[in-house]
Length: 326
Ligand code: G3P
Ligand code: CA
Image 1 (cartoon, rainbow, N blue to C red):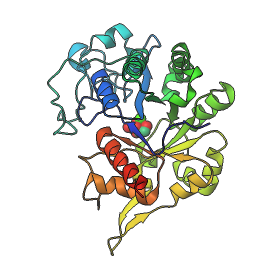
Image 2: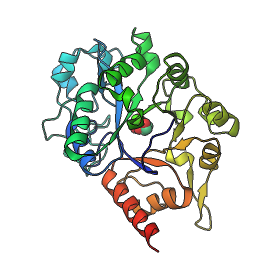
Image 3: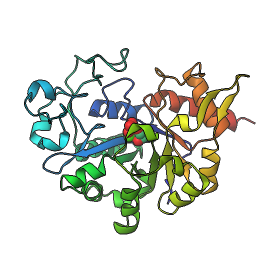
C-alpha cells in the first residue's frame, strides 16, 4: 500500500513551520501554497477526546496556557493538553515555539509575541487542506502522527480510533493514497494494521533511544536487518532521524553514512527522514542545498520532513527538470 504520488515527496513538517508558528492553520495554508506533497499533523486529544493538532503533550511551549490557566499545571509543572477541554484549548493563543528559558527556539523565525494564532482541531485542519485541494486543484495529502498513545490509553482514550473516526468522516478512506499514518510506538502501528485493519499506509518512526519516547520499542534493533524485517510485517515505511543515516564527516571529509536506507528499501519500505531545517544544519553540512543533494541525489530517500517545504520543493523541481533534459 503506497501513496501514488511522485517520489521523492516533500512533507511539510508541522506546516511551513520555518516561516509561521508550527501547527497553525496559516502555516498549513502556506505549506500548501509552497507545493508540499503532504502536510504533517501531530495529534493529541483534549480532555473531551477531540483530536487537536499539537506537537507536544503539553501546551506551554507553543501557547499562552500558563498565563491563561496558571493553576492548571500538574505536579511536574507541565500543562497537559489532555487536562483541557476543547473549549479551553480554543481560547488559547498559539505562538512560535519557546524553550524552557522563555526564548524562541529558532530566534530568526516568526516573532513569538506577534500574531493571532490558534490550536486547530484535526477536523478543522483537514477542512482547510481539502478546501485548498479543491480551489487549487491539488491533492496535497495528510501525514498524521499519533502522539503518546500510551499516555492517552492511561487517561482512558484510544487515540488511534479517535483519529480514524475523523479521517473516515472526512472521506479519506475513499482516497487512502492521500494519507500516511505515523507513530513512534510499534504496538500502536500493529494495532492499526492488524486489529483496526486500516487502509492507510503506516510509517514506523525511529527515535534516538535517549529521547525517552512514549513506547517500549527498541529503536536500536529497528535499525538492523532483523528489525526492519519485523517492521515490514506491519508498516509501509520508516521515518528515521536524519542523523541515523548521516553520521558526519570522516577525516577525509567524506560523508559517513549508515546502511539504514538501503536495508529498508531492500525490504520494500519507504524512507522519510526528519527533520530538514535550513536554520539548523547538521555538523559537516555547509548549506541546505548540500543537505538536500546528499539525501536526494546520493542516498536516494523517498521523502523528507522539512520546516522549509518551498526549498525542498524547488530543489526537486530543478532536479526533475535537469533529469528530463536530453
Ligand atoms: O514525525 C516525524 C517527525 O516529525 C518526528 O519528530 O518530534 O517533530 O514529531 P517530531
Ligand atoms: Ca511529527
